[in-house]
Image (tube, rainbow, N blue to C red; front, side, top):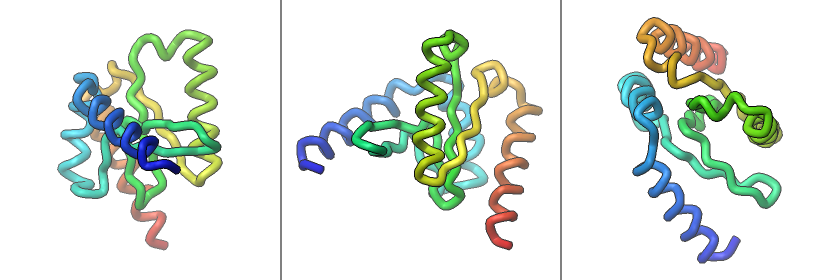
Length: 125
C-alpha cells in the first residue's frame, strides 16, 4: 500500500469522525464508558482492495457496530451493506447493525452493551 493511499485513508477517517451522525456519537459515547480504548470510531479496513470504514469497532472482539440511518432501508443500500458485512466476515469480524431509532432507545442501548459484554466473556473461555 502506498504512502499516498495510507494518507488518503487517514484523512478520510478523520473527516468521517468529524461528520459522524448524532446517533453514532451517542452510541460511541455510551459504549466508550465500558470499552475504553478498545472502541474505535470509523475504523478503516482494506479488504480485497476496497476500503471500508466501520462506524464502531472493537478489534479485540472482532466486532463491528454499524448505525444505520433511514437510507439503509433502500434495496440498493441493503445490497451494499450486505457486501460490507460479507467483506468484514471474510476477515473474521461479526457485524451488528442497529438503527438511529434504536440508538435513541436507552433500553436497547443497555441490552446492546450487555450483548457485547457477553461476547467478550465468551471469548475468554
